[in-house]
Length: 223
Ligand SMILES: Cc1cc2nc3c(=O)[nH]c(=O)nc-3n(C[C@H](O)[C@H](O)[C@H](O)COP(=O)(O)O)c2cc1C
Image 1 (cartoon, rainbow, N blue to C red):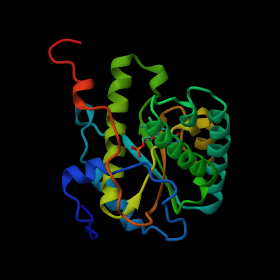
Image 2: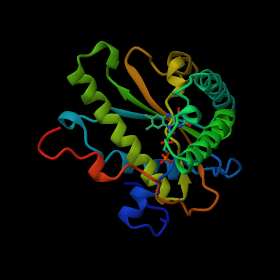
Image 3: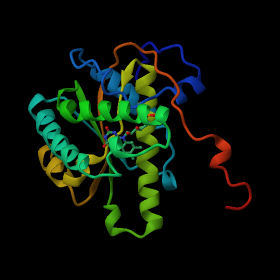
Image 4: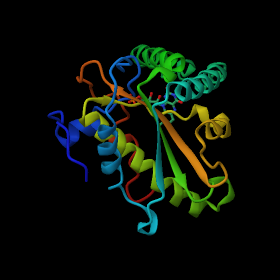
């Protein structure tokens, strides 16, 4: 484990419930030290893996030209997504004025990142090495994604604890191969699962979000 930088005073439940998709509060002007990225990846590697065989990989993009190229692809994918009524975050009716107001704020935040992804100090692409899910039976693809998705969430939690912001995104995967080519990722054997900006946040006071209550989603003993 690399030495630990100072952490925010968040208890485990606060950390878990205040790690938001950060977009408008990313500080694009403050560089993120490589050692901080190493710490977050080291923490992420403590997540579980099928057969105790970790296959997760993290591509950290700092080069300005490569970030701009990935950011342009993300922007174009986001523009396409914005035309999909009922799928685009800003077009989903949440059923009440309050919830729709919150949804509009999330959409505005997502639009902002759509424009500025490539300007983040670093872009993190969580990948799985081995084989592509589209060539596997479900049990194997569940194993594959089960290796990388918890690791990426752990990375995001570790980042939040260090004053860094992240935002889970997947839209660039419409053009995953182009991003693979820009970054030299072997497309046939390495699958990308998530793209996130990484930056210090402007302020660290994030709040729990409104979510369905536990009793609306638990199925005790039977669905
Ligand atoms: C599987 C998945 C895909 C997502 N894809 C995108 C995306 O492409 N662009 C984006 O801005 N946010 C994306 N998000 C972030 C969600 O919009 C965000 O998690 C949601 O609005 C709830 O906000 P919160 O995470 O701050 O609670 C994604 C989240 C998940 C889990």
